[in-house]
Length: 267
Image (cartoon, rainbow, N blue to C red; front, side):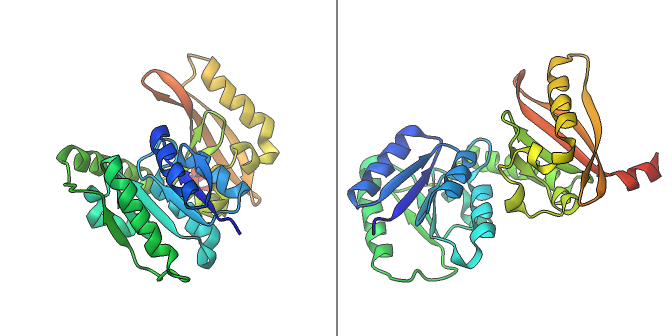
């Protein structure tokens, strides 16, 4: 039976390159161009093998891999992280969570290296558990600017994770791109139940109020945010809706969530 390989990368040409190599090996190739698109493909297709870039817009590689691990648990298919900054991540590969890692390099070298890699994993009927392999394409060294960028991204994610309120980041189609741990606690839902879901489906009883709030913070230039009270498992939650502005462009929304009862005690 033909196997399905999902390739997720925001570099169109790399997706085509990897897709062509996989098709020559007999795989049906499914393509996605960011982590959000990747999750949609995973939920609609039967996947046997996943190749994912680490740095991607909307939902990045580590968040995509985390979603897959939580959704499929022991029945998870092999995951290969393919990135130009693998070397810069050498000290934190366990946090990414892939089974194998391939460093991007010159295309001509990658083709040979990739086919050798596929020969190796295809020769094993059962892949070894909890083993991460680094396969480098050529000579690759850590770059100071890449290390600084990774450190900055880790710092920003830590702020969102540790802040004392729930934070949900929405894309322009109202689907969830990121949540912090407090959101999971407030809504009593798992990470895989929230990521890439429309916020409307999370608060169905407040559908119209939420739609109005999302519209109003965009169209009313004098309005910084809009507040509403929503319910999740019979618990009241205070929701503050704000625009997500990047370089003067609206690209989505940020929702701040608080336990309504605890908030009322403080005011």
